[in-house]
Length: 409
Image (cartoon, rainbow, N blue to C red):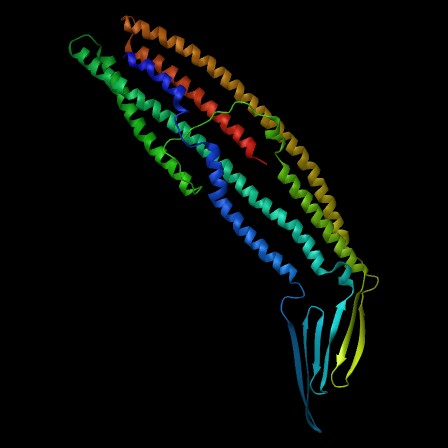
């Protein structure tokens, strides 16, 4: 019976008995988790896209050909042509005239701001956005890991406590049964001890099953293996820098979206304003001579609705950024408020635990002196244990919250 009071000390050392920390698991997640693998795949795809942009106008040889047969009173005749181009290198042939031209031709507009430069600028922006998306995925996985880790520690705490309580309740049941058989204990106390022992065994069985499932989650959901013993380092203080970085990635993404629209607008305005001006020089194989060729293509007096639309899109994004900044500031204030609320709850639970411990000790003394029933004594003890568990769980919740703030962006 007296062993029961010694079990509370197990609560104080429980969180210091494990070998792997949450920080180490997060490092493992960043190296081996599914999100890290997705990020590697995205980087491979970005490398492919990067090479594709570098090969604009140089990605293979473009070949075009045509032929036509004509049948009339003069007989049959045929005409045809074939051309090939690789970047600014050109070849043209008209086989009915035996004409062959080799030369160079370039759209002069592309020299200053062509499709390759435009796509390169867009890719530079889009690359960061896409990697930020992978970082968002990693963040969500990390926050989920923190939540699962908190659930694991809460379950292990409760299971450890109840396993440590089992020997005392078993001894109580034996003692009260013997006392009931010789008329020294009431039937109610005896039956109550058997009920509590049965309930405790059921709780232990279910908690053990729950714990197995929670531990499996680390492997099935996060691709991690955890040690059977885990050290849970409690955090109590939230620092300003932990929250000040929240929202940085979202703001960066909207700034990048604005840059992207600005690039679209710039290219559209340039493309609309300036004509396509092709200049080339060709060697005529048949005539053994060089020729120069110019061509121009321009639509006059065209309304540039595309550039105007990009300007509207830019203004819309700037408005969204202003709204986002306010929402982020409000979210930070809510997080600070939640932190302060958790700290106050812990303070209240510490006071409640002290009061419940004092009340339990009074009932314990009265029971040992024969002035209190077993049921009342055990109920006070359970209130004390419940208060201790609630305090530990709330402290675990605070630790998980602080970790969440550290990794939320």
